[in-house]
Image 1 (tube, one colour):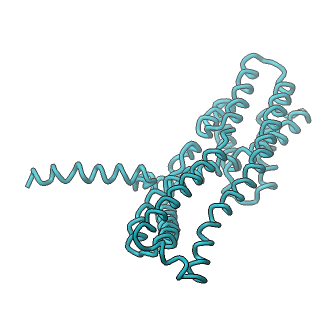
Image 2 (spheres, rainbow, N blue to C red; image 1 turned 180 degrees about the vertical axis):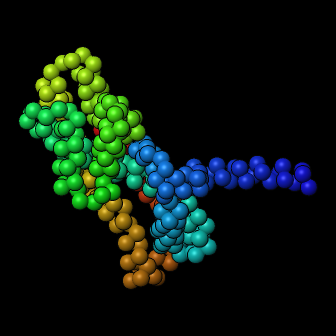
Image 3 (cartoon, rainbow, N blue to C red; image 1 turned 135 degrees about the vertical axis):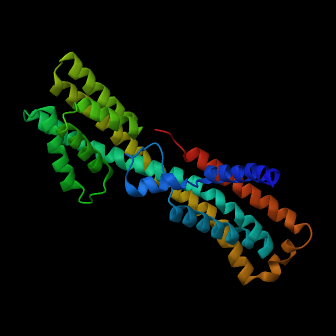
Length: 284
């Protein structure tokens, strides 16, 4: 009995490791996220059970439809649809990037408010409190990422924690270069006793210009990504049209060497899709 248990544990552990690689999160992580016990780490994005199931089901359905259009075999399409379990991993990366992009945009708006408040003669602490009020007007949703983070900074300042320490904790969790650079400049200025207003103006101006350039690049890339998705969908639409309008014309492909031609074309399409994804994957 003990030997059987020892044999079961490694297989269960391997299955759990494989599921985690695909995007499955531990129950403790999901529970802590729901309860709000841990501060958000913006370098990670734990998927909920519903998000995992939705991503896997949508990918499985898409794979089933694509493979069935090529082979007209429900068995082959069913086996291929099991690859949908890999989709949550990529969905998690997509959601992570989107959240960081939202945080960058929100931080850019906060920089304008901070520099305006400092120019009006307010202290750094009061400038952050004023920026919090401005963010509440810009983002009515109380779940907005930067709004929550500025509320945490405000709470820490109310508990006599230096603002640079509170911002450093936020920057470490944000995992965004622009926020880290801003906090570094602010901490250096506070330690050296330099001209806080001038340093913050220059730092905010440089970071804002960088974020604007990144947004312009993202807009251009989004257009090309949309065109790439249309190009990838055209072969499947063409196959569906021919299969419905001229089944006799397509019949030779579903016998003998026709399956080899279909497999070669399908692999070539996957290669093109991978190449387009690599070309459009521009790190900024």
